[in-house]
Image (cartoon, rainbow, N blue to C red):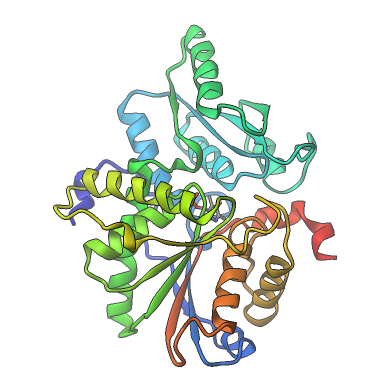
Length: 332
Ligand SMILES: *Cc1c(COP(=O)(O)O)cnc(C)c1O
């Protein structure tokens, strides 16, 4: 795969570390060796997976002459924080449309990412009820900004289109090169599966490089069959965009929906256990909405004997720890 033909802003200059988690693995019985890909350490304010996608999406915006970025997300969206962060660095205006998926969850003076929106100087935030037509809301905002002479560009939620997912195709290539350099063989990969760009990009990259590493996605909101279909659709679009000749079969996509709990962003016992255990064994911070639930999934899969004894499992840490500070009560 030759990804150099796609415009990007070079936000990702160096590979993020792949680290062993010996104490965490031991705490889970020691039969499976768990490794972590530290995309929480990517550049951009407070790090996280959206930087890889925005590298390509913001390049596309700038190529289209945009001076303003509009995007959307949940009230504690890491994607909104990182889009704003890169817009600041590029000298672009940034407007956010926030979906209050849990009624009453938007707090004007909220902590976590919500606080960072203001600190980073967001131009405007529009809060809409859960279930709103987010694209429609962003288009409305874009029309108003155009009337003021602005050139807005809309980045979809999570930057999860084929442009953004290309960032995670690149990540899969990066991982394969690192594993070769370390002479480390990975048997299985576990990733969070939300707006699906991360999961889709990794699947395309692993399939396209003939890695032979199965990828499991841990859902954070949707049911298994719905999510698998969304991921596969984006896999096909992304594979087509990067010029892959083969099509990627649907059986390359596996999602687990048992770790969502009552709903998106609502805490679960498995999530709090995962966040505490990784913090207290390896001093790595997960987040309550994505990586915490994804790690709860990995922990359960290890305990239930899903992975063969002695296997090496790589967890993709997608970031999000600023949201922890909006969940202090959950951890007390
Ligand atoms: C957005 C996000 C995810 C999910 O990635 P998608 O590409 O939307 O599926 C996972 N973890 C964190 C911390 C995120 O912010």
